Length: 241
Image 1 (tube, helix red, strand yellow):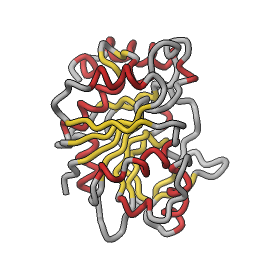
Image 2 (spheres, helix red, strand yellow):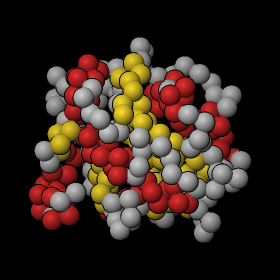
Image 3 (cartoon, helix red, strand yellow):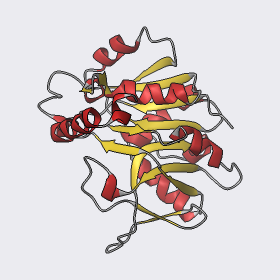
């Protein structure tokens, strides 16, 4: 199974990225000479994705102007007024994403692949009978720009559960995922977090995870952007990505 459609979530206000985001949207902030959104789109292109939906809100015209001449992948835009959050934003774009599983990526998570494209690995793991979604996870101890304790624990079959207090074996969700449109069946509509749908899939045993075998950076603040750039310039892998 090779997904051909994807969504990049780019409608956020970027408040934690201020002052860098005072005059430009967070997806347009450069990291190692390339806007964050292009890092995600280049990875999607490398996984064979042909069509990407990008949602827009804060300073969205800048994103649209930057991407309107990009030929691969093909870009469709969805404006949001007001912001619909992660769940509502994807639900609002389902008419563009088709009936098959699709990728979704946050625009403030930058990842470098291991031996195989991380998106391709998600697609290879997909089991349509068992899953409504697969989340790409990372070890929080090796995640640059992230200082939390993780989000999920993973069993030997790849099924997820929420991290419990005191659990030191949890993984952080990278914001990269493969979802089936049926996850949104009877979704609440309007503005809501994907966590509402994750919880429902967790209860049904239909939310899975895959641990990333490359590097992941949470580029949510100016300090994290600087830290990511420093890593990129110090490592041959980053310079050649």
